[in-house]
Image 1: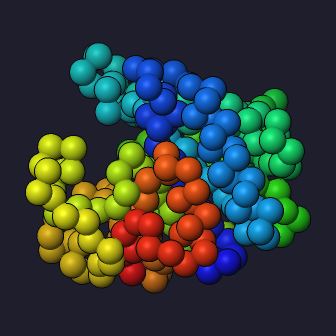
Image 2 (image 1 turned 180 degrees about the horizontal axis):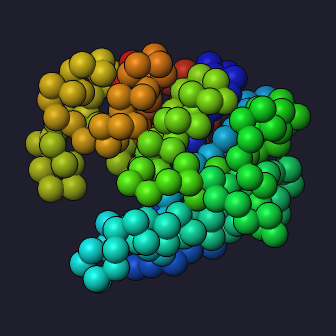
Amino acid sequence: MKYKRILLKLSGESLMGEGQYGIDPKRLNQYAEEIKAVQDQGVEVAIVIGGGNIYRGVQAEASGIERVQGDYMGMLATVINGMALQSALESAGMYTRLMSGIKMEQVCEPFIRRRAIRHLEKGRIVIFGAGIGNPYFTTDSTASLRAIEIQADVVLKGTRVDGVYTADPEKDPTATRYSELSFQEAYEKNLNIMDMTAFTLCQENNLPIIVFDMNKPGNLMHILEGESAGTLIN
């Protein structure tokens, strides 16, 4: 395996499958199988998952809810997704820990850096929920920060497309995929890979990002085996 410890970032929308909202059990089980396959090869896996399939903090202002309140609602949505993913992973035979940026002892552990690293060393999959526990930060920022804290080798951003393109491939059929980019190139080309806070954290800490299609079976394993199945930003 090319990477020993990874931080896998999944969007909440990816859990919807073909639906318009909520959680698709088939997609959840597919992700669990993909993650189990790489963990069986000795890879230590940490996961950050969004909450957009349930609620987005940025929806708050449109619905009359204060932004800070809306962000906390979004954080709770990520915990719901984390619990669902935890259940799917454990049903597939893996040991997991759900850690939260907000204290809620009845359902998950509080995030403690050394404890998270110890869980990974013991072969447990660690899911980070509730963002970093503060409003105004996205789950992309959470993924970057947690990856740096646990000394991950790479951030794997699972999306619906197989990498970063010159334009939106769902709208522009002439768009071409980049196989590799530098952080500077991505910034100059104004490619919206992650929000600037998340992107800058990775850049300043020399943490590579790989954007890939998580919905294609086997893609996660291909990347960890060193194949070019997405776009590498380093």
